[in-house]
Length: 75
Image (cartoon, rainbow, N blue to C red; front, top):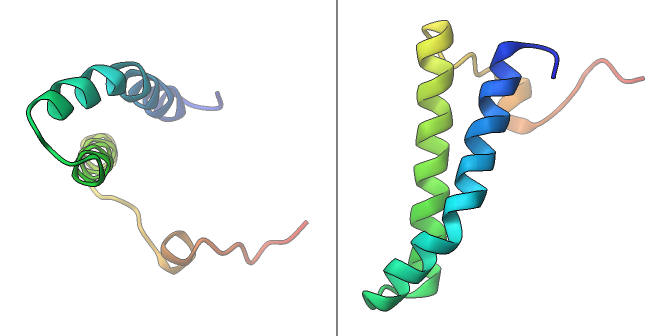
């Protein structure tokens, strides 16, 4: 990890990965379709990671390169 921010994201993703089976079972037993469960958990994780970025930096720091996943500085 190169920074505390990367560590926070890594921990958040690990927690999401660890709790996912419990969420899937709970929502599955509640009758929620699998496709909805995947979308809901994905959006939930995205919102959580965006909140982490916003709390840490006061902004999400998105730019054209981030949104289109491009890198103009090729190796």
